[in-house]
Every structure is written in structure tokens, then in C-alpha cells.
Image (cartoon, rainbow, N blue to C red; front, side, top):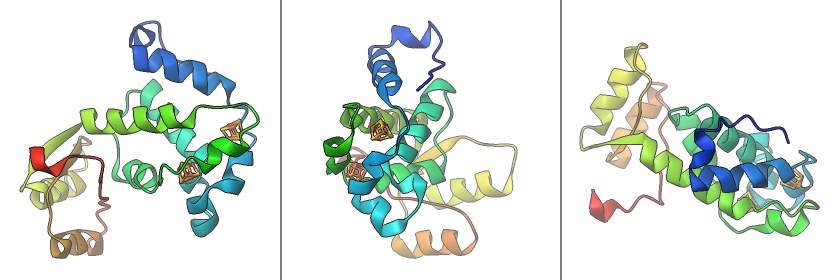
Length: 161
Ligand code: SF4
Ligand code: SF4
């Protein structure tokens, strides 16, 4: 796969490793066949090839993680069934770990203010920062009913919040 990291971005060890791995991926989609979330949900973005695309786009373009991207990355079970069928031996494990680290680093922890901040971002279209924080299941349901996409990010250690 073609990559477009800048020289500056490649000074970061994780980017350098991910670039090497991304170049090996030929986008064949064979990995999707052994991915439980792809088979269950039938959405390209819930399979390894789609997630690889999302991660590459986020890293190369230094995008703030959106709730939609977080959702698809979150749904990965880290079972690595995809790695068993990849003919190019793409190290998906590194890519998903890197994507998750990037998400955690590039979202602001707004703690208990999460519902309020999420509404501000949604209704004030000028802001596009990524956030994470705490919400009760009821608050999360209300946000979803308002059309505000939220996702759980279980890899964040809540004990540190
Ligand atoms: S099987 Fe391997 S090479 Fe093909 S799309 Fe999946 S990760 Fe890329
Ligand atoms: S680790 Fe498992 S759930 Fe995640 S993309 Fe690979 S096969 Fe799918």
C-alpha cells in the first residue's frame, strides 16, 4: 500500500514501524474472512482492512479521532484471527495498538463534563476536537438519541481519570 508519511512524522518510532507494516498490505481483504466482527456486522470498517485504512488516515493526516473512528477501532476484539490469513504477514497487532495509543493521546479527557462537552462540539460545528470522559449509560443513551455519536474506549484505564 502506498504511504504518505512526512519525514518529520517518520522520526517517531511508532510511525516508522507502522509505515513499514502498511507498505506490506496489498489491500486484498483476505483477512476479512477470519475476522469475527466483520462477519457479524458486515461493515468494511469493522474488518481489519477497513481498520487499517482508518488508522493510516488518522496517523498520516494527524486527524483528531472522531467518535465513528473510535467506534470501529473499539469493536476490534484483538483476537488476531486476521493475522492468520494475511498472505503478506501484515503485523496488524502493531497497527491496532498504535491506533489505540494515538486515540488516547489525541483526545482530551473532560471527565464528568463529557455529556456537556459532547453537546457543545455537536451543536457548535466550528469545534472538532476529540474528547473522552465519563457518562452514565442513561447519559450516553440521551446523547445517541440526539444523534451524537459516542463510543466506549475500554482500553483507557478509568482508575487514572
Ligand atoms: S490480508 Fe493482509 S494484505 Fe490483505 S488486506 Fe488484510 S492485512 Fe492487507
Ligand atoms: S484482531 Fe480479530 S476482531 Fe480485530 S480485526 Fe483482527 S480478526 Fe477482526
